Amino acid sequence: MGKLHDQMKMDLELKNYSPRTQTCYLTWMRSFVLHFRRCPEELGDVEIREYLHHLIQKKKVSQSGISQAYSALKFYYETTLKRDWNRFLIPRVQMGKRLTVVLSSQEVQAIFPAIRNLKHRALLMTIYSAGLRVSEVVHLKVSDIDSQRMMIRVRQGKGQKDRYTLLAQRTLEVLREYWKEYRPQYWLFPAKPENEALSVSAVQRVFEKIVLQAGIKKAASVHTLRHSFATHLLEAGTDLYHIQRLLGHTSPKTTAIYLHLSRKNLGGVTSPLDLMERTGKSTH
Image (cartoon, rainbow, N blue to C red; front, side):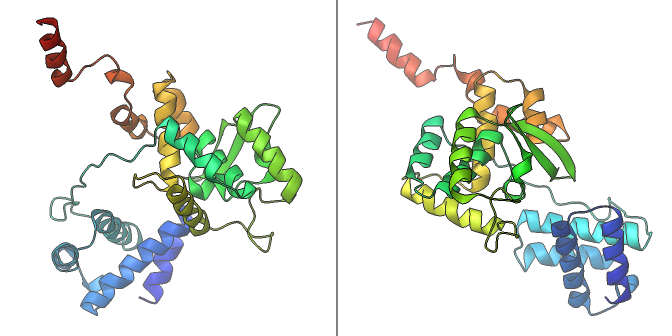
């Protein structure tokens, strides 16, 4: 792409897109150009439709991948080339809705005793008790822990937004124990060398190992701890507005997914099979 690649990269930076999104969009644009082996300025609606159809039918790309490719192409043609985007001629693929995995309180409680490494235990307890994304926990600084106000400051989370979230008393106790042993100076959970932040993939590998040790059969990831945090708060009576603020969601619609994951509103509902069982017993 050459010059056009540099222009798109500059536009992404000016729009303050995250480095991860920049890399993703530029990768899809390179794939698009290599598919046709022509300058993208020469390509239009017909080629975009053909490429997206190729990804769906021939390459069997996931729905999230298709959505990323669509967004990358839309950004490039609308922002970098200043062209109109015909959303009727180039429809966005409809994303199927899947409910996320949530751990029960008992399953979460089973995880922490299975963690022998103090640093790993402190890290995962911080994720769950504060509802953090893994990308947020690896970039926590020692100074972000406010034990006076029992808050954790999250700097530049998703969407480049700062926010405060909860610091649990149990988490604070483990963090103090961890600090006495490891003495982190800048990053709360540093990598080696200690002037570098821990990688997201390293945390994911640790969690996968611990889930197996704890005997949990669910297809849980590190992000499951964040979902479990929100669901457990909702079930305990916390309203969606405060959960939204703690999670750093821009839209309440995003937080509303936890209504589908929670049993709070189903507590008084009995399955018809159990009702039949009760009715049968009462007639004897």
